[in-house]
Amino acid sequence: MDLLEKLEILSDAAKYDVSCSSSGSSRRNKGGLGNGHKAGICHSWSEDGRCISLLKILMTNRCAYNCDYCCNRRSNDVPRASFTPEEVVKLTMEFYRRNYIEGLFLSSGIDPSIDETTDRMLKVAKLLRGEGFHGYIHMKVIPGSDPKLVEELGHYIDRASVNIELPSTRSLELLAPQKTRKAIMAPMAQITDRLMNTTASYRGKKETFIPAGQTTQMIIGASGESDRDILTLGQALYQRQGLKRVYYSAYVPINQSALLPKLDQPPLLREHRIYQGDFLLRFYHFQAEEILTDQDPFFDLDLDPKAKWAMDHLDLFPMEINQASYEELLRIPGLGPRYARRILYARRSAHLSLDSLKSLNISLKRAKHFITAKGKRAPGAFFDPEAIKRDLIGGPAGIKQLSFLP
Image 1 (cartoon, rainbow, N blue to C red):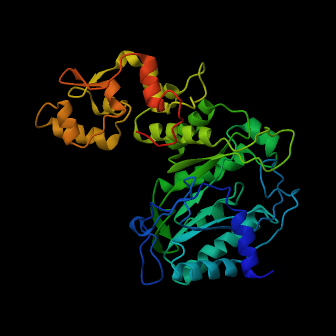
Image 2 (cartoon, one colour):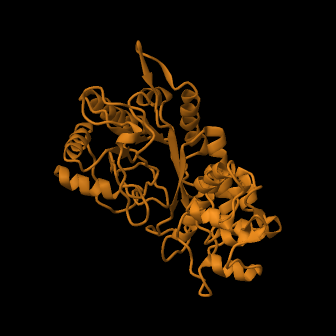
Image 3 (cartoon, rainbow, N blue to C red):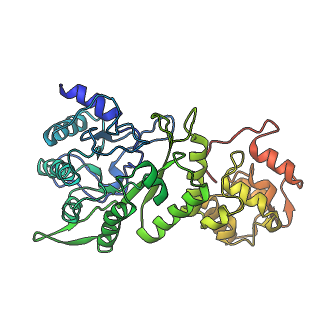
């Protein structure tokens, strides 16, 4: 099998792992090829919003595991292939020179063992750095890897991901019995502890360790957890493990199993709502228990999470734009961090009117129902909750929004 045939198989096999990203590194060019600095990584996006700026491949799609949800599981009859470390290095260098990519995202099936697979991935990183490649490298750390291998790998790559895959221990036991929560959390915790001191003496040199931090991925819809369960776990990972991102991937129904849900298509809108909830956690000072409750544990597919929260707390609105704190401004549908900061800055000089907001290029399309300025409501603001909801959804037809916050 030639290199291009392997590339076709192993790039296609990697498409379901969305825990890749291409920013946040502080690795600079030291006279070689490429630059992993955060300003040196470009982004391109597929139609469904996934980053495709990296060469995203597997070392191998052969796997000793037989996870029910995975296209590369051992029992699937699919074409199999494996790269050697030298082949991955050759592809990365050649693609970079042709300006096709800005870095590498490398994951792998487990063949024949966890540590042997990790050792081959480590060899890729060593060879790339040894050939003077200073571009961005993101690698998946396989749960159960020897901590010594994880430590060594961390000195060569920019970002690591340890994928949780399923949101609960019970789901892992049912759908991926060869994986355990303990094995998943061990390397994640190791990286977190190590990142507490971002630079350290390594073999006599002061070097960085995974400068762009770590990420993880959860599959949405393959198991029975609620959106609240998923969002609460995401919040815990941000707070306790200091993750840079939690990625959520709608389950793609590619395998037949009595343990998997019968879906006609991936739950993409549900995935989108969970991402919006994740944005509220990271940028809008919300807590998971505010967004979803035990009584209402799933996101509304018609309203984005911030608008739904506002509709459930209409007693707090309208907010006077000249008196609301930064945290309160972030709770207003249609106002994000950038608009909120712009309002706070402008308020230092004078009380703001509705015309002032327009002059600040602040759109009131969604916020008009929830604010006053100098005590006045915006033109077109509704008082009736049903009328507000129809306007937020996009009209009587109930058009489902697929835009991100604010």
